[in-house]
Image (cartoon, rainbow, N blue to C red; front, side, top):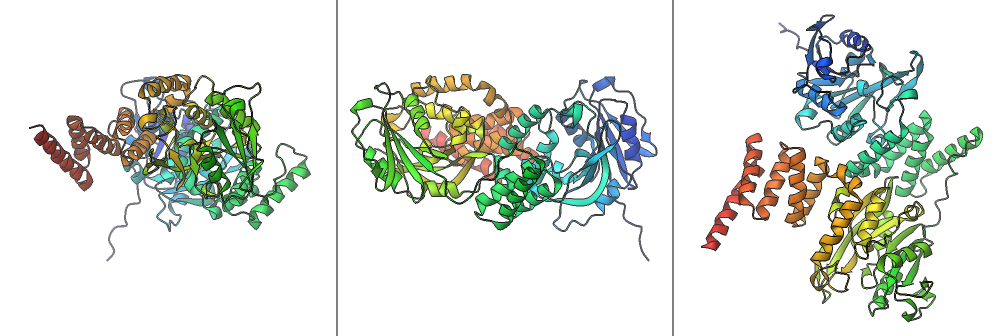
Length: 633
């Protein structure tokens, strides 16, 4: 005898409401679902000004959630309140001016999920202000699409509550496009399942977010948000964009859907990953043919991918004895196409140099009029003299390892990446290795230091053409300022390899180590950097995910002081974050702040009482504290 049929999972339909006239239409569409077990959760984003709602809507349970304390909620805050109020196993957002078709939930929940997908989405029908169909959005794809936009409209996407339980939330740093950010967060934890059916309606010309079409389109605002998203999620996006097959599939889908700009970016990325790829070459040819047939000249015909790009190695030289070693290391590169540009920063006192060095073309550039050039002026003279598509600075007392340029040029690179960097091995005054600098990170690292040593960093000439220059107001730390300038324009890619040598204990800039370190100078110019780039740093310092990541990297590099500042900032933004509590506890432990460390680790253990790692960290704290006390006796 069979038992009762299992109850189908509860689905929560979540509506952030400004109490617009269209709310009734949205509620009607939610209540009309053929799925038997659902609840409606309406968050009063306009606060107590929202009209009362009944406890049921056409037979479906409904809850109206008011913010406490009473206030008007920004979009991400309203979304997070909806997540916290939901009781369902599966969750689905619905804007108060959009609609679900009756089979929406049943269609998505019936889809097979062979990879354990916790996100399922469908196509969306797009209508204009008069209700006329403009087309559809969303198609089969992969996470590569998230580099450009969301994979689905908000209403087309159903996701498991387990993602929320793991900490996925809407980031208050995104006043708009918060759904794009949210989907990337989900994508770092789950595959997505596409269902080839149109199950909802997006009124894209309604609303005032600037994220739709017509009167509801704000292209500049969208560009700013997408750039912010790409900075925040640089690591996962670069990982997805390093899969040539996935990028090729996305390119073909974009081409089929008529999005030539995204298609071309993806085909170019495939050719970067797999030079000469036949399918990508054919795709670019198809785009060029479409442009010719339509008379469009907005995009240039794809450039041939035959000759390796020219790389310029740029050396500001004071004609020190170490110059020959630097030139030897530049000439020894395995990359076939490069030039060496030497700027005589000491003026006419510089010795003459040949037109080639160990078989590589070399140009010696003298300042006009003759004079000694400050560091930023010499760097700008290098930029003006360079002819390469990619540029790389090399101080006259440092060295490149032979595979340096080839390693960086071969790295998988997303279309927006125009700076590529690796680790630099640090040598002392006797030439002995003492460590390394450079690691995978986020732009917020620039608040304290360069993300890489200049010799370890290759950057595209296009940045210079856009106006990236060395600021004469920085006689030192001019490279730090320059790379902040670059970070405002593009993304960086880290390559996990050691490809150059920084002789940090020699020289007289005060920006190195040992006798070449000037702490007072460091504080003076970093304060100046913070003032100059305050607008760039302010949003970065409010992103807990990136603060936690960079803090953890500094912990691994055994720089507890920098780690502590990042992690304590993360706790201000997100006080209950387990990772921030645990990592900040360890940073305080390594800095000798035992009371603060114990408070943070104890709170982390209270939130996760069975976590063996946190218990182990508390045990380490107690042993360290006991040993420190014993040493004082």
